[in-house]
View 1 (cartoon, helix red, strand yellow):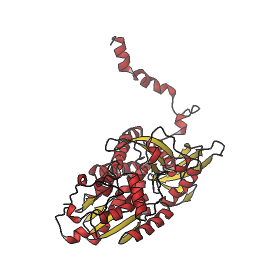
View 2 (cartoon, helix red, strand yellow; view 1 turned 30 degrees about the horizontal axis):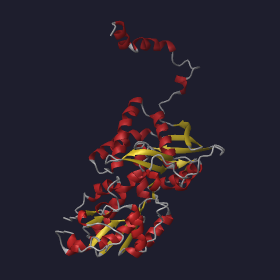
View 3 (cartoon, helix red, strand yellow; view 1 turned 90 degrees about the vertical axis):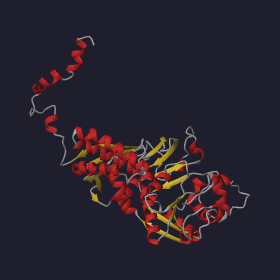
View 4 (cartoon, helix red, strand yellow; view 1 turned 180 degrees about the horizontal axis):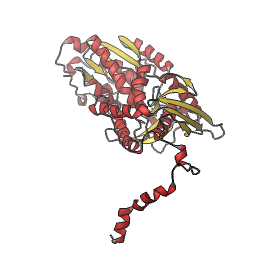
Length: 423
């Protein structure tokens, strides 16, 4: 079992950074000691993890795994170049289609949202951790590492997957209690070129579903985010002409855009561009982290905003009132599990069973108007609609209004009874 004594180590830019293996305690063989698989993003935290795993932990062989879940291709390429220079072996896995089909589509069915956050980073972490664990198993490596801090949620999302294996879990950022400014200086000293400065220390995380921005002055909840942090969305402009898009759903998932059938990945990419041009999908919020800390979070998610809003609207057309009321509870429970990274929890499968059943009739199309940062449903239709225009029309004679009188007599009966009794 790996044991680490952080109290013995005082980190300083001016001290000797190498740590003898005698300061780390292992109870297994040399082969397990020498090798580690690092879930790698290409950013500051995971980049500095590579030399730290050598110098502080004594690993001789470091295998980095970068999982492409729809982040910009330029980020993937830069991450690959950094890892190839720093690591002993680097593996890139294209998991974009799997991410959309197996993680984002269930999220849409559940109208996934945690306190207004559309779970972009949260829903991707278990998949990234799963891919890193698979590489470790293939190579017979018994150590898994991540670059998450001890203050956020990602450590829990990764370790919910990692700790289900027989591997040791190593978290340098958390175990060494590193500050971001220290990391920036450490990266410079080691010739690691990362796109972060002390003046603009934004921590950016992107995938096909959302883009998150945090760190620096954004940690002050009273500080207005500068326009420079946004990469997907333009500033909402009331002078820009509204745009209407039509989205077709089949069994609760989007299958076409403006009448053109397309796969989920392409559809989401296109909606991100269209919605982003109208400033749709910006979120600035105070979020309750799993550990109990409140954090200021900023997100961009144009496609997610459009698709979840459209999906909810279509559900109200086709699901019964009882289904909708119960589904609100299911959606909330699903979202909380996804936020915590607990997609392997038995309850997750139970909730998905209900969601998949309920979505069989969520078929149809929704017209969405995009304007000045808003995504508004302006029309919907479905072959499975529970809506009957003839019955609800003021001009219809199909139903006799007189039939409702008996129902009205008993509506609110108990409240009136109590009032008469003076209670």
